[in-house]
Image 1 (cartoon, rainbow, N blue to C red):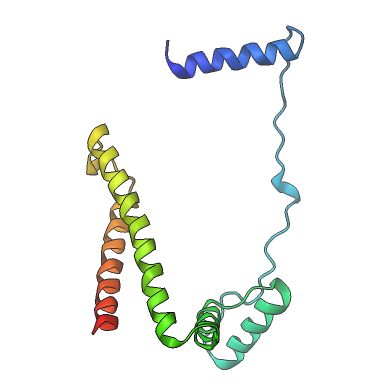
Image 2: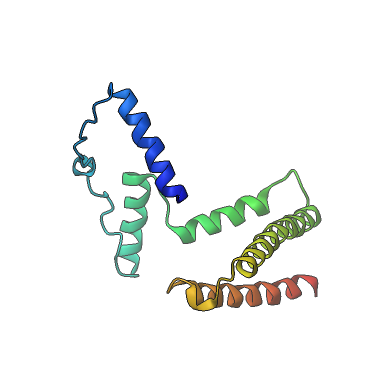
Length: 153
């Protein structure tokens, strides 16, 4: 008997015990009907100054979010202005953090590769989007490698 069939039997027994030996049919209910749409006016607008101003105003006032480019700039400004560390400490700390995260990524890759080999998963069994994702990750790693060499040089 398969695991899924055994699991279904156990669940059926538990449900039957809970209802006093009588199975009840449960009617499905959709709960998404009461959810309002997203309130993001002008989310997709032109790149002219008027549209940018309106988009930024709406993003911050109506939703509390900020435009991504501004967040990146703000994070850099906070990183640069942090007076608890000097520039040398910030750069060295950032390199240490990069090393830590790359170690974690390497562990994920090794674990995935091991499972792929053990389970005999062929590249043809990947989802349609997996191949392009792998290529995009490889491109990003090359870009990261080039930028890291710039830091080192």
